[in-house]
Length: 138
Length: 126
Image (cartoon, rainbow over all chains, first blue to last red; front, side):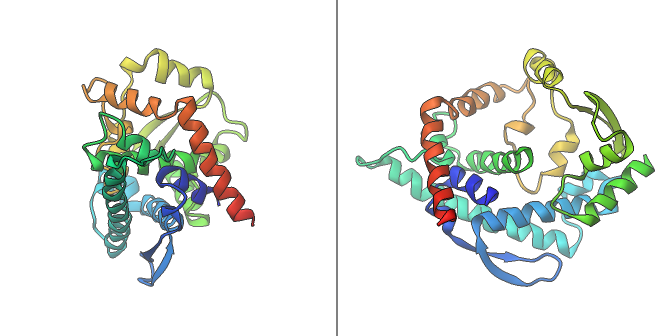
């Protein structure tokens, strides 16, 4: 519930109901899940990577893909980022229309901002960081 | 360092959804954490601030002197490239990012965001 609320404030209540494929990095099983569940799984898998002794003693290794788990983890991130890219493209076209109404979600707010509006990758970064901050500080 | 690291791995294996640092700190320091404490994990010594006054001092009053350790960037490099949390305080990009993001939480926008929270929560309850 908490992750669904946070993701809804970030991408909007409609898009948050989208189902996306999640590949379990431990078993390889692929199943469709809600966006919030996908990001939640990514977060859990991220914590799982932190527990890898190799990453604890050599933390700079976290930036690289070294195990099959890392590759599957990375594919899930790409799935989520792909979803955000599509949504940003769609939303930025919507903002240009005359009948556009303020939506209130974070990506719409940042798309209207002078600094962020032309760089969708920056918005994606902020959305992910805000999700992390929201999940781990409540 | 080894014991702190072992404790953290133990908390991770119990529940990977936790941020195990705080559970580990409670176990090794005290149930009620002091305003400031240090742990040796990730092959490094980490200082934790656990009081609003100290956080205000670091993030607001002395913000110009505070920046992030590379370990934070490395840990989430696969997830993000350069969000505000990873930009050095001295970087020219930091000020406009900070301004834009703080404006995103102005009252009018928060009201709209609260409506989304209300809608999603009601939908969930139904």
